[in-house]
Image (cartoon, rainbow, N blue to C red; front, side):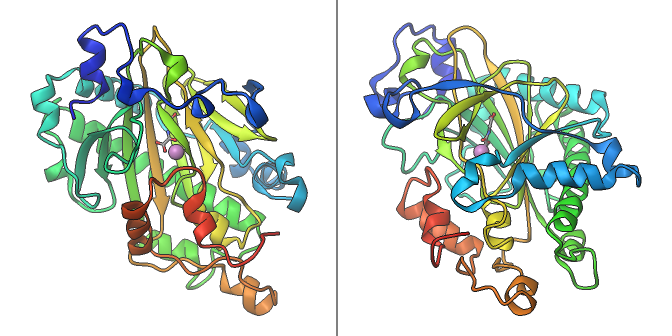
Length: 358
Ligand code: OGA
Ligand code: NI
């Protein structure tokens, strides 16, 4: 499996059959999701979160973006854009640049990091869930575990990758913690208190970085860079270059996210949906590719440590007297699920639901 960068570099003009989606899964498929459009995501300016006189308003924006309103869940989009986030422009530019240079390395150099072990500290691969995909996706990726001092295992080429990626990882983790703290406050879940989830996260967390490479594709209307899916953790922070491609499902339509250079797209993951007992919803998203412009994105997935069981917050269940709407979930359950299914759509989360959510 040599991946799509290799195919693109070889100059193919027709999409190989193994990448051709059935008609109803193609990006412009008809039916319920026929119409598409563009969207400007709700924007959180981090400076307003830091300003005591404006924090309440920023929390309100965050809450309105993420909260689910029962049958009217499409009122909120469950994804936001964070600007003025304090991560240095050089760190962001450097990360995208080293990502690009990694995928320009000879295939033999990249292939040294290929692994089918989903727990590997570094893993190079292609498609979405390579072992299970019936149709392949137009994506190559490099996955780095960031929560342990495993940089020794990270690629040695490009020579500055370890430095740049670890600086970027530290910065995104800091940003995640700020957004998580804000979300807990907006949810009225006293996450900051003694023994709270925020304190747990400060002591140890799971942090994976995926560098995605979507080369120019000869027939982009027949395939996808990533199929519809939700992310596994609490929040994902996505840095994209200037090329659009990320789409989110909103009100039964696929909306293309306008890239704002230097900003982070922040989306609610399955763990936050579970932890908030359905108040916040993980967002269904996918990636489209195009025929002329290669695209790079760097997605950071943040959650509790893998061995930690995640369930609805006890303060909702005990003090709030709510029934749990999701089963307790751990990483091993997720891996077992991935080994048995392709992991698309929100099927993993649905498999953890106990009853209809809010
Ligand atoms: C992901 C993802 C979006 C993008 O890596 O899970 O959804 O724009 N990435 O690459
Ligand atoms: Ni994703």
